[in-house]
Every structure is written in C-alpha cells, then in structure tokens.
Image: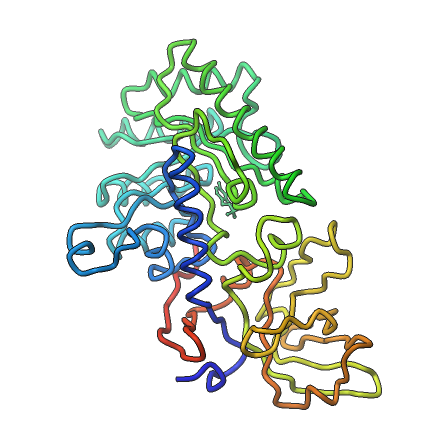
Length: 386
Ligand SMILES: Cc1ncc(COP(=O)(O)O)c(C=O)c1O
C-alpha cells in the first residue's frame, strides 16, 4: 500500500525518523551514565515501544535472547496492554488512585516489577492497608515536585522526609527511590533555557536523594526526565534512570522550544483538502479537532503557530504559509499566505500535518501506519482507555 492510498485523516509514522530519534536518545542517556525507562504514553503502541526498548541489533540471534527493557506508563490500561505483550518491568508514573490499588496489585503479581508512585500519606495509608490485608508487598517511588507544580512532594518540606522515612521503614513497601518530571521545561523558549531547567531538575532531585540518604533512607533510584530536558541534558551525575516519552515522535511544540528540529518529527496526520477557496485565500481540510486535538502548541514562542505545521504529502517540503488557524470537530481551516495560491491546492490534494502535540494527537487513533519511503509497511494497534 502506498501512503497516498490511505483513507484520511489517519496517523502516519516515518520509520526513518523514529529509528533516528530512538537511537540518539538511547546513546545520549547511556553516554551520560543513566538507564532509559521510556514513557509509552505518547504512542501506547508495542511496535513503537520496541524501538526504544530493544537493542538496535534486530537479528534473530540477538532478539532470541533479549527481552523488552523497562518502560513507564501513565494508565492502568497501558500497563495491562504492555504487560500482556511481554513487557515485564513497568512503572506507573502517576500518584496511585486508592480505588485502583486492587488492580495494581493483581498486575504486580503477574510481572517481574510494577512500580507505583505516591506523594501523600493518604495514598500510602491505602497501600499499606491493602498490603497488610493481603500479605502482598509493593514497590513504590516517592513523587517529587521540582518546579512544575502539578504533583509531588516539596523536596524541601519536612513532610517529604517523613513520607520517605515511612516508606523506607514499612515492611510491606520496597522503597525504590525518588521520581520527578520537569513539565515546566515546556515553558522554555530555547535550547539554552531548557539546559537550565535540566540542570535544576537534576540538582533538586539529586540533592533531595542525598538529604534522604543522610537521614538513613536508602534511595536506589533517582528517576527524572521530560523530552525537552533529556534532549539537551549534558550531565546526569547522580541520576540513575530517565523517562522521556515524546522524543520518539517529537512534534511542532518540541521544535518551537528548541528540543528538536522540524526534520525530526516522526509523527504526522495525513489529510485531504476538501475545500479550496481562492477568493478567501483559504482551504478546508478533513482533519479537525478530533483528528488533531486542540492543543494550542508553543504559542508562547510563536503566537501564530496555529494547530500544526503543514507539508506536501511526501513530507519533503514544509508549507509554513499554509496556516492551520482554526479547528471544528471534523474540519480544519487553513489561511493561505501571500507566497501561495489556493488554486495550487485543489480539492482532493493530500497534505501532511505535523501536529502541535503528538501525544494528544496520537491518542485519537487506534492504529498508526508505518511509512518507509512511499510505502506503508505496517498498521500498528494502540492501547485505548484508562
Ligand atoms: C511522570 C512523567 N514522566 C515522564 C513523562 C515524559 O515526558 P515527555 O512527555 O516530556 O516525554 C511524563 C509526561 O507527561 C510524565 O508525566
């Protein structure tokens, strides 16, 4: 099947770019002395995860003895999906929901390792109560906030030390260590700014781990990472593992903040022009909010970034003068800039859209088409739901 034979809108992965992104992150992280536990929430897809969790040597002899490396998930649905496909070392990187402890413990008994996260005494109470009732142990990280302000304990608070001590002392808990995600890196405007956040993320978390060790708390893992910080980090001293996820696909947001270039973006949506209006200098595409998500993108860097970057169908020529200015449910509206003529994009023309936020866009699709050259070489299913 050729790319141009696909029904639109649909999700397309450029395999050459995917391989390059996977390889360059793995090499960087290993060079800096940490291990990689990639986040699979971006793609929720076993075939994509294989690129970041298997050795590059895909020869049958190498594959015969290897198994998938560790991964990070954001939902129980992802955890169960990947566990059922042979992934055996999984961290659920969201503070545990007390109502889902039972499911989590069931999965824990089925895989080699299923790590949970807490950032409160309340969630720890629920875990401890369940563990005591069933006689089962659990592996757990303490979630730390190093500046994002979303979830996690304040590493400078008394409560953070107390909670770590409690987990370390619990006979039911296998306290793994500390974990953070520097989501505030997404507010950066350049590679230099991201480098500063990467250093701050590392210093805060490693400093906290050292303070815990000084009070006798054993900290095995110091786990951090977002795609922007890990795409630029040059020093991971004291860090044991990193968990970027978006880097396999990248997107327009990452390119605008300086975490990648437009030529690194491996994920795109194939779309068709269904309206061409020379008088209004506009086009209408068959990809709307349900095919792309309404993520506003890095508008702090480029207020006119629209809802994605368009290119010719082969992805070879970017078309920044086609600005995807508005989305309704199933329509995308494009303003055609001065350098282009809508008549050159008649109804039926196929285009590619590199979306603002590949994680949110990818989650709209139940399969991805894997593209090599002009040919579709796979249709890969994804996990759905929670
Ligand atoms: C806890 C956690 N770890 C890792 C990641 C991966 O970061 P990124 O999406 O920047 O690759 C995320 C993303 O939201 C996350 O929430």
